[in-house]
Image (cartoon, rainbow, N blue to C red):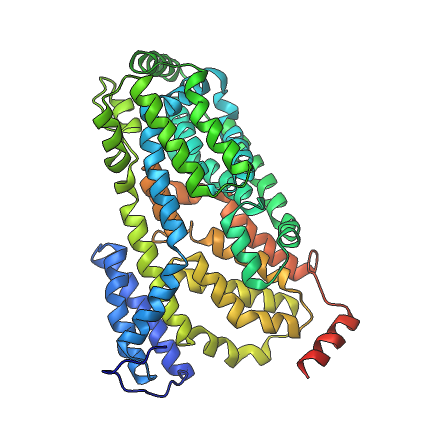
Length: 478
């Protein structure tokens, strides 16, 4: 596959435990020093790490050309996510110009109660992402509008982001339309609906506890005269700059309908973006060149209201550039590490000591978090968990759906909890809220892995093979 007239065929060997540890420690030092000490962009750090990994890989028999081919092959699997991100960027800019987002904000300020706002946001995002199958799409559309409503009420932006992120991830995890749900189940070889039903053991308790917390936080919101006056000013200014009425919600209704009908997410979002542009030009009467440019650089308009200028001037494909760069280089790096068997060597060394259900679950959780910590990619994490832990789970009588659930609870959600995770970067770029502000309030992302560990400890919700099934598996292996 990698043969080239300029390359010599070299024997590939797996790293020793010590060499694997050295690779991981070196990569960790590069990440920490690059991001924390030099404040360098993640994409640059990860791209430079390719050279460092190549130096280690050369001793194992790999050339740079081979590793690059491996990285490109891995990146190819992420192209769909790149297209969706670009489509979401275009959609945000066009929906602001079309009046879709301003209309949601306008009505939301009049309808939603500040004390119940956080829990309502949680539920709305959970329902939207459940029906559409996309957490990123929910955050980039309904989430942006809900953020405007909450900030207008004087609520902490970090809490708002935490509520809409938690709700978006709940619906995304349980939706049969979700790409992450389909990916996790397919990687582990689990029936999709069996995977979804198995996640109920962690997602329902996590959402319930999250709702209680956000309800309590909501009652702590103080509504003073200044906030009431601010709501009135924002509503009045929105109605001056945009035509506010239900007609502008048509692009959103079309997108949700297409997603429910299981149309590709990128197609549905792009159709919604195009409709938004039509409404912006012919209904809101914005200049056509400005609207089309908003698809690339984001909506840009000088409002007299500073709040509206900060809130509504956003979106565009350019806003997704950093996230896409991070996705490409972290995914590529993950492919290299997987090919080199770095994590597999470490896990195989201690596999004979892993016997109890709890230790198995804890080991899978650890591999998942270590994987996303190294690359910021949930796809890489799922693949690494599958390659290192699936046989161990089966050998100890645990069915693959236990592992596919762990991939979602820890890997899929975990990329929200590290500042250089692909999802975290998407949220920062989309909502314009720093990681340090929203991370403490993404309760759902913390609670799911906690409930996963509790299931491993108690045995509740753990699916096991029967003695007869184990015998059949052993016969097949023999």
